[in-house]
Image 1 (cartoon, rainbow, N blue to C red):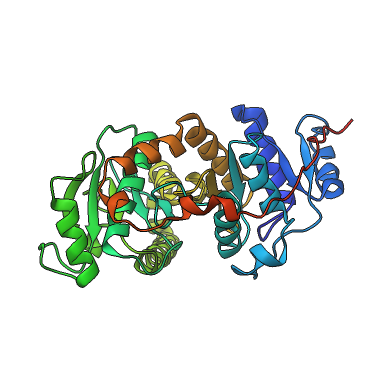
Image 2 (cartoon, helix red, strand yellow):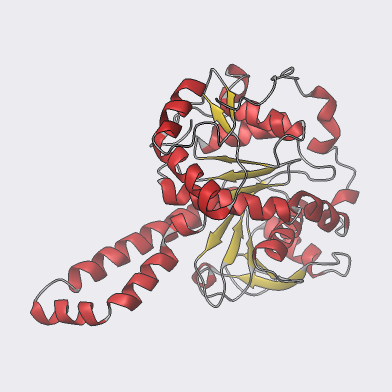
Length: 353
């Protein structure tokens, strides 16, 4: 029910993921509207529905998790807690999805703060950036944990045993940065963080160079960096498009380069990557862009399926256990599970006749 084009585009993407990619799905939201959309694809009765009276509005923030305790996001999280679903995909309000999933699923044992990991279109393989906006203020130990989360994610997404990790900073030298990044560099460079292949500091101009596999930063800097790159790429493509359509010679050149331009466009198209992944909770959460169309939702469902099959939650648990960050004596989100407000039994999944 979340997204600028919900529920039409969301359901269209879900049907594509189910039919063409074999992703098992449950659609959570207003059953009547969902059923009406499924009729357009002759999919009524083929994809289960769980009804939810409420849905988070796109402009709702973190407090929506308390104001709407039976929203479609809250109920989807409850399905994960019950073991009736393995992952959640939403194109709804990022703040609302993050707050609701943190409240309902809680942080994993030993994880201080969750992080949103996004994929950057680099070569020869994509680069993972985290945090892209879940936690604005992070202590040095939190940045070390983000490196552990990114390593676990990279092992599944990139297929690497030891993805290299870089710390986003204002300079490549170890002594550069603020107090948090300097201390994080010391911790990551130490000998106690087994399983993290730390490559040192990287700067902003390295984000799209593919120099490292995982880029670690706080959510404030990461979100600004991500949106700056998105705006720059959009502007650059606009300029290229205008240049290649000005004059007969330019149009002929564009025609000859059509295939390469199409490949370049697809590589930089965010719909290809599915969205950001909220790491560090007791469940897999994929947050698609609010403007997602069907193709982006299909990609997000494929990504969620891949992460669940790769046991991302267990991988993170194992990776965090290898680092020192769980030894700082700080009570974590995962130790407060008893405060979770139960939703109660949701009843059986509704398979429509």
